[in-house]
Each structure stands twice: as C-alpha cells, then as structure tokens.
Image (cartoon, rainbow, N blue to C red):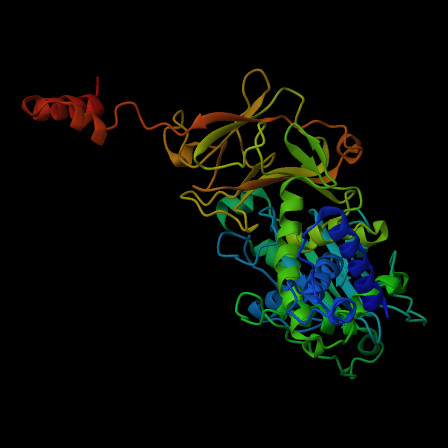
Length: 521
C-alpha cells in the first residue's frame, strides 16, 4: 500500500544517490535486503520518521480537539460547574488564574460548557445598562453566534442555541439567532463589564445581580417545566500538566473527534492521519513502537511550532511592533489555515470576531528582541492617536504562559477607563516596567504605570466594538520604545561604592550617603 510505495521510492533514490556520491551508508529494510543481501540492522527508523512528519501536520490540524478537551474540563470542574449550567466568576481575573488563555481584566466572566446534541438550549438574558456579550463557540473554536449589546441589543430576551442537524419549531417567546453549532459540544464565553467605579470600590453587587439572571434551559424543559432532560457527562480527558503519558495529546484528540466530528470536507486529510492512528475514536495504542515514538516527538515539536508561530507574528499584520490578528480570527476553520486555528486555541482558548473585539498583541520590541522586565518601555499616544472604539479599550500584561502578572498594586491592565493622566498637549504616555517609574511619588500615585514581571512578557491591546480604522487594520498603534535597563536610584548605597572607598574613609562615606538620602533640605 501507500507506505510500501513510499519506501520503495526511498530505496530507489538512495541507491541512485549512492552511485553518484560513492560510499554512502544506506538504510536497510526487507526490500533492500532482497536486493543487496544485507541483513544488518536499519541505520534509521523510517516508520518513526514518517509518523513524526505526518504527525506534526496532524497535531497542528487537530490542536483544537487537544486543547478544548483539557480546557473545557479544567475550567468547568475548577469552578464547580456542570454541563448546561452557567458558572459565574465573581471577581475580575488576576494572577491566581493559571490556566492560560489570556483572560481580560475588564469584564467578569460567565461561562458554560453546553451540549446541543439532542435539543436546543435557551439562553435568557436580562435588560442591560452596560456592555455585555455572550460568545457562542463550537468545539473547533469557531464562533457560531453572539448574544449581546452589538448582536442583539440591550433588551431582555430568550435565544435558542442550536446544534448540528436539529430541525423543529421554536416557541413564540424564543428567538432564533444567526447560526448553529457545527459540533454537539460547545462553550459560552460571557463577559459583563465592570465599571471603573466598581473596580475601585470593590463593590460588584450590581454585576453579580446581572450574572444571576443569565439562565440556560433545555427546550424540552422550557416547554414543560416538570421535565428533567438527560444530559451526558463531560468526558474526563488526560490533563497535560498531571499526565505522564507521552501519547496524552493524541488520546484526547481521538476521543474528542469521536464526540465532535471534524468537517466532512476534511475527510481526505483524516484518511491520511488514520494511517498513523489519528482520527475519530481510533486507538493510538494499537500502533507499533516506531509510530508511537514518532507521535511523541510530533506532539512536542508541533506544540512548540504553534507557540513560536504566534510569537513571531504568523499570519498577523505587523505595525510598529504590534500584531493585528488575522481577519479569520474567531471563525478560523473556514480559512483552512490550520496553523491560525491552532494559534487561536493556544493563545486565547476562544477568540472574539473582530467586529466584537480586536486583540492586538506585542511580544517583541522594535529591534525584534523579546520584551523583558529587565528593561523599561514607554508607549506614547500623541493627541488624537488613541484607538477609535464604540465601547472601550485596554492594554493587559501577561507572562509567556498567557497568565496575568502579579504586582504590588494589583494592576493588570490600563485603558481609557482606568483614570490615566493626559498631558497638557493631549498626549498619553504609559510606562511599562517592573519597578515603579522614578517620576512617581509612590506606587499608588502612578496611574500611567503598567507593571511588568521580571522576566519576559507580552501584552494585548483590546479594542471593544472597534471603529472602522482598526477593523480595516489601517489604524497604526504607537511603537513601544525601549528606554534601556532599569536604573538603580542615583543615591543608592551600592556594594561597589563601599568597596571602592579606602578603609579609613569607609564610615565617613557611609554617613555622607545616609545624610544625603534622608536630608530634608
């Protein structure tokens, strides 16, 4: 079959090469042994290499199934949630969130793992007086609909979330929305704005009251409140942080694809991946040791490729060091750019459609060097240069694992609602560094400071309900200026200064420096 044909081709090319180049060590195989009489052990394992090369492609294609299986389970169980029920986060995200995904620090999340394989689910929302959005996502990471200020308005409503292949009539008090999920399992990523006054006071009572009015009801129960519909349990996957199984990624992929089939359009790809045991409900343990070794390497290197592709701006429009996301963000499968789809899952879990919110990212300075807390940076918006939005914008700090960064003042983002100081000429300058900027009297009196970690970091600039300039990607954000390494205070008592003075001047020097530091003159 196909593997034998590939192998015979390798043999022919290898023999031809040896005739041209002289003494070349050729791989041996049963086919080659017949031709040459050589019974020595192979010098390389072609099956492992074939499984590796094909496995990398399979991993990039199938990464949503690898990420979502772990992501759904971890997010739901850690929040104490159940399928088809909201679990509400009652506080803004901070550094205690360690699941990655680049969470925002502008809104409180209401999330739900949903099952739409049997019947629609009715999403009920109250009348709203603030920005909110319900992003509805299938298992592949494609948004299939929205409920929220932009999509459905701020009135109260009941909206039907529909899965694949469902046909039927909806009651008159339930509205059908724009699209249906391509997979039985899906996710709701709800975001409700926290005002700056609420952030400063810590009183989130009004937000919690809104969250408590978000409801999910199966259609059968909507029609008959006495009905208790049966809902399948969410499958417990191999969790990557705790699993020592080198094939964990592939086992999750195969199971998740069985429950959430890929697009039939991709059947030719799936037939190829099936040769190495990858696909819906296949058992990768049935493969031989060579293929297993290739797949172990493929998942490791494939994941690194996805991370590196994002960090270097793959498929993104680079402007002044910032990266606009690909236009396909939010619904990447239709583009058939599987690397874009994999990057979206790894960097953001799920991602908004650009019309809802654009996340412009930066992880390198103007010279192509990784951003680091060892340096000081400045981001200056000239008068009129701030982004045009119909809701609000913010800039959020992350470590390389896409988690928020802890800091002494618990400030994880700054933006047009955070009370930054505007200069007399109308410009806005943001200081981005690990230590308190020297011009600030104290950490708490430094509204334009976005604290950075000691090591490498990246940032997202979020534009909620962006205006046309950003939607068209011709708005140019200002460049991030590297001001150089952090500097110690000029009057600091340094070990080197003490070492440089002679012994007889030691105490005199210390006294003078102390007097200088604490002088009230």
